[in-house]
Length: 223
Length: 251
Image 1 (cartoon, rainbow over the protein chains, first blue to last red):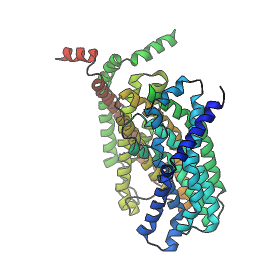
Image 2 (cartoon, chains in turn red, yellow):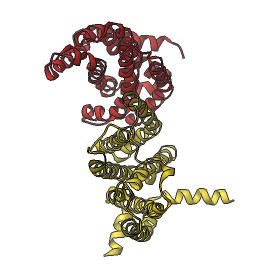
Image 3 (cartoon, rainbow over the protein chains, first blue to last red):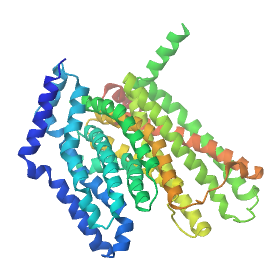
Image 4 (spheres, rainbow over the protein chains, first blue to last red):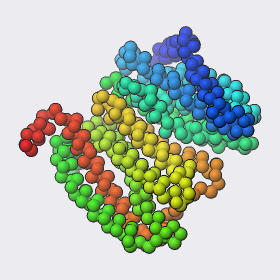
């Protein structure tokens, strides 16, 4: 087994995303739409918004992350590529891992980069912004992993979208608690070490187990 | 020798015909067991146990609430064991039993939340509190609903069941994590949380009905599980020969 097919797949995924840049960035537009709705819904008072900011930015990021998940494996299932993964001699686990990395680069990284702007919109104290970005770094990676698993589980169904959102909800509860919690405690002037440590532990656990479960879910769907 | 017998027995149990016969024999006894235990439990809970010195009579709802909560969690563990068997040995009966367990577990979780809410209104002064245990129970309900929805979304029963079995096993790791993260979350926001009751601080005179009701709920689960599995098996195999023969014989 060589690294060449893996590398080729990685380049292909990124190139496809770049060619459809407008579509790839739509989740970001959605994120801002949610962020604009919040002040419109609860009022523009800076004090209230500052208190809600960590949780709201996190919820908006998670919601926008859901949008891209359906396309993680479905095009490959529809054009038959997915079956070829098992025919070739490249490890499917490696292919899935590469797919996760490219998906995170396309959907996760932009969210982290625009997080300071989102934080500013909701008056998050500036000293909490680095923690927000760091927690989103871990959180978006976890969302990609859990989302990939759920996308693989729902691959054989017709109405994947709504089902996907329902299935991912319990998985993402701890991520939201620790991620939004980290930002909130830093905004209050405390240390977020414990939150970030637990979030990292969760990521390590997910990195070891989720790709395996994803591969077996994918295999069930091509049988 | 014994090992071979066990293995043969295990595989025989996995064949639909053998399972069908067993699941026709056991449920009447299990329902009877539930009836007897529940009757004793309810009688003791309502007439024998003295009222609580602070809560009066309203604490008696715990004799439904606590067994339901325990059964909601126990059902998940049983379901996960069945899912493991289904995935490793590809036994269809185990798949069916895991799938029909999910609605039972969801019902138990809902019963636990509903009785807790009814009790909470006069005692806490609110229908709902974002307490750690309440929240993780609510998430558990959504885990059950997700498993049911995933299974139902597949046209192919077996594929749907196996995919849902993977989700069940993921949940087995995830539910404790959810539980602890939610506990962490509430301790951050509100110092002292309201507790239902300390296990050891319960007065001994209040224990017997709880034991009876817990056993009754186990019987209820076993009876419902086998009855539902039998129905599901018949429904899925309705065009198979063994079901047709069975129907011919019974008419």
